[in-house]
View 1 (cartoon, rainbow, N blue to C red):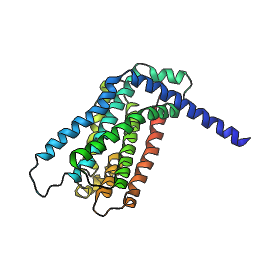
View 2: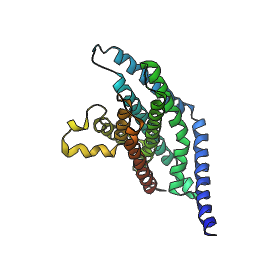
View 3: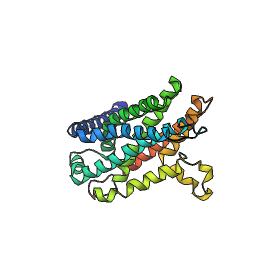
View 4: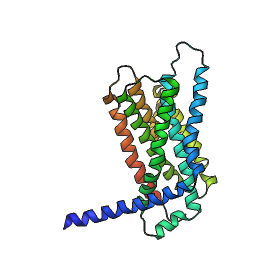
Length: 259
């Protein structure tokens, strides 16, 4: 009897998440421009990245060391920025308010949006990794590629949740715009992607734990290093997972029916 009592609320929550996700998917199908931007923009940026690195005339410079973390950053930036803007638009058009009126809870709304946008995250991560492999002739093993894809996919999902969390503090698209470069700059400067964390002043190094890009970059660097093993990235994957749990909790906890 107790088991049935516990199962029913869980089934209802999953059903409500599915309902929210289905509504968001229908909305995405009516907005092909948004989908095109999310999927085509990484291709254009990758090609420009290829042209840039192709023009670097330095024998000791190996672009393969940088392109995968930069590709992960592209996914992080595009997914986070687009989702933050779209979620604010959902708020200004009263879509979120109607969901609350319909009886959906915060965690169900957040989970539904995450479920719907996971389709874009999956495609975007695949496009980026395949594109980087074709352009830069990456010579990693299949197992390494699979784990790298998993890291980029997890980063994309966390970027969606981060976009939802940030959008909860903005009333309109104008207010969310300054938040986008703030988060992205933290990702650039404190992820270790451009400069090793050890080179930063010690008092500010702790900021790195605030960005999912730090955990993703650590995992990717561990995977692409010579003689690396899959187990070398376990710590970073666990960090991404823990970050995700905390972020989803914050996104659901700060989601409000009205401003």
